[in-house]
Each structure stands twice: as structure tokens, then as C-alpha cells.
Amino acid sequence: MPRRIDAEARTAAIAEASLRVLERDGLSGLSVRGVAAEAGIAAASLRRAFATQHALREYCLQLIENRVIARMMALEVTGRALVDELLLQLLPLDKERRLELVAQVQLGVLSLTDSELRPAAVRLSDGVGRACHAAVRILTEAGQFHRGRDPEYEAQRLRALLDGIAMNGLWSGELKAAGPMLSMLARHLDELAEP
Amino acid sequence: MPRRIDAEARTAAIAEASLRVLERDGLSGLSVRGVAAEAGIAAASLRRAFATQHALREYCLQLIENRVIARMMALEVTGRALVDELLLQLLPLDKERRLELVAQVQLGVLSLTDSELRPAAVRLSDGVGRACHAAVRILTEAGQFHRGRDPEYEAQRLRALLDGIAMNGLWSGELKAAGPMLSMLARHLDELAEP
DNA sequence: GTTTTTTGAGTACACTCGTACTAACAAAAC
DNA sequence: GTTTTGTTAGTACGAGTGTACTCAAAAAAC
Picture 1 (cartoon, rainbow over the protein chains, first blue to last red):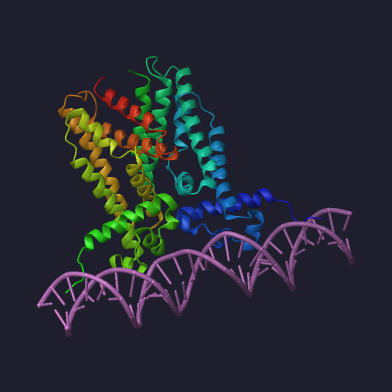
Picture 2 (picture 1 turned 30 degrees about the vertical axis):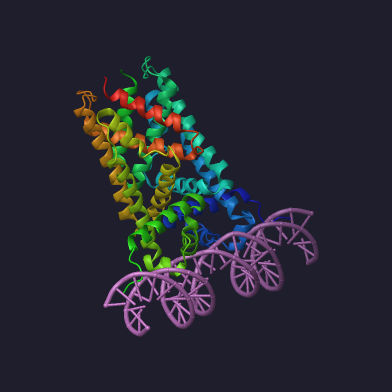
């Protein structure tokens, strides 16, 4: 009976268009009409996939989480190299990751004053924290984490540092700050193995 | 001839009302009518002080910078204690500082897609960087910065860490994260004096 | 007193917003 | 073929937006 049942692909395509709109026009551009135009569909079709704008914004955060996790799962290295690649998925090093991060920050800031959106934003934020704890664990197993250091403290400090590097990278234009971001993170990880 | 010439006090009062609106309602609440209502004045009076909404947003960033700098100038301690107090002015430890930080992040994120607002946001961001460089310099002069460490690297890392701590503090509710933020920063500063 | 300037309140315009409809068209399932 | 479902286009509503006016009231300066 149904004409087509690619509901998942449709919602994903809409959410990806939303991310592009968020990076180009910011929060004010994330409207039903604007996203529908970016996705190349009718506004009514969008509202069939997402009944409210809140559902759309929530799914955007979900999509970002899914994309980051997918990239992390696809990594095939181990030890320190894995930690490097893991954390690099959270920095705005190329167009794709910058797109995700800008969208995440825009929606995250919105969640500060939109209580409905907070749970989704907090979930994504918690994911970053888990990744940093995992990074410390992997370093420990690889013998690249000095036994005298406090794993819990270092995980939290790494998380804050990572967020700070990412934010500073956002203020700078596109790729200008890719080098400094990489070297600072690498240098910090190096230090974890020593004193 | 003029009725009153307290133009500066008026603009400052409006901008302070804007910060309150930004924290309570977010960017979407920063409208001419909304801010005028919060400031307790007529919308026409607001538009006499700020001809465009862009001028209002720009002055909000200016006001935040002025307030932070004023607090820093008022500090009367030296050495490590000065560094502590200096950096604490940039963390959301109480209502006033959280208000400023939320407003700053809201406008900063807006500046990502509003090129007119970028210069003001970048100026404020640069101020944070200068504060971190000053912090490292003060620590060095006080003998609390190990000679083996790289001042430039440590200043940049401190800046990223500070931003990250601040952002993480924002996602957490109000004062819940004040303790962890303080201890993490203190511990990091302690380490700068050693290895 | 009069004059001058700012404020306050109100109104208006053209626009966009989220949301909710309708009606016509297209394609797959039976 | 018919039926069922999804897409499209269009319209409509009430609300909010930035911006731009007008006009009466109020207060300081002369």
C-alpha cells in the first residue's frame, strides 16, 4: 500500500540539511521553511517527518552523536594512535567535523534556555566525557599513562582541554587553527606518559 | 536645554537588562521589545540609545568585557593568589559571572554566523588569551612556574583548559560544579610549578 | 515665564515564524 | 484496473520581529 517506506533515510537527510543550515545561517535559520528548502522538499513533507521543530532539533543532536560514534567505531588502530584518532573526531579539523561542532554548539547553547532540549544536549555532552575516560583507559593499558597520575583527574582535565581546544578552533577560521590544535593535543597526551 | 544627559548610564542599564534577558530567554529573547520591557522603558527609548539591534548586541559584548576587566583591576593580591583570582573571573562561579558567561557564549555563537558581530566577539576572546599569558608571566615572576616549561605552550593550554572548564560548568546547573571547577584549575596551576 | 530636548506610548509596515489545513498528483500494493 | 499512501503546492492563522513614524507629556535650560 505505501508509496515508499524510506522514513529513516528521509529523516536523516532532513537532519543533515539542518546541520548545513545551522552552520551557514545559525539558529535563526533553523526554521521549517528554511530546512525544507535546503533539503529540497516541501515544508509539509518535513512536518510529516518531524511534527514539531523541537523534534527536529532533538534529532539533529542525535544525528551528530551517531555520526561521531560511527567514525569512532570505524577506527582500526590501537593504543596511543587510537586515542589520537578518537579525540580528533571531536575537533573541527575539516569541513565535516566543523559542521558537526558548529551545529552542536548552536543547539547546546540553545539548550541553556530551552529546557526541552537539555536532555538531548546533556546526553551528547556525556558522550564526550565517556570518550575521554576511555582515552585514559586505553593509554593506561598501552603503558602510555604514568602510574603516578590520577586517572579520574586526567580524564576530566582532558575533557575540559579538548572542549577548550575545540571552541578556540571554532572562533578561528576554518582550517587555520588545525595545526595548533593537533600539536597541542599531542603534546598534552605525550605528557601524560611521563612525570 | 536637554532634559537629561545620562546617556551612558542609560545605555549601560539597557545592556545589563540585555544580559539578563540573554540568560533567561536566550538569543531569541534579545528583541527590542523584550529588552525594553526588561529594562522598564519604552521601546522607542531603547531605539534612541541603540539605533539597530546590531549596535545593542555589540555593546553587550563590550559591557561584558568592561565588567570582567573592572573586577580584575580591583584585585589587590599578588603572585599565585592573583593568578587564581584573575582566572576565576572567567568561570561561572556565581550568579553574576554565570550571567556574563552565558551571554558571552550566546553572542559568541551568534557571531559564528553573523559576520558583523565577529570583530566584537573576537576582541573579547583575545582578552581571555591575554589574561592567560599574563597569568603565566605572573607565575614566572613569582617563581611558581618551572623553568623547564614552555611559557607560550602553557599559556595556550591554560586558555583552552579555562574555556573548557567554563563550558562544562555552564552545562551543569548553576553552582553544582563550582567546587570541581575550582579544584581542577588549582591543581593544574600547582603542576605548572613542578616538573 | 518660555524654549528646547528627551521620554513615553502608541501605531504602522512588511516580514518571518510555527502550525494547521486543503486539494491535486504520483507511485507502489493489491 | 482500484486502493492506499506519500509528496507537493498552496493557503491561512495568530504571533512576533526590526524598523520607522507620530504626538502628547515632562523636565531641564534660558
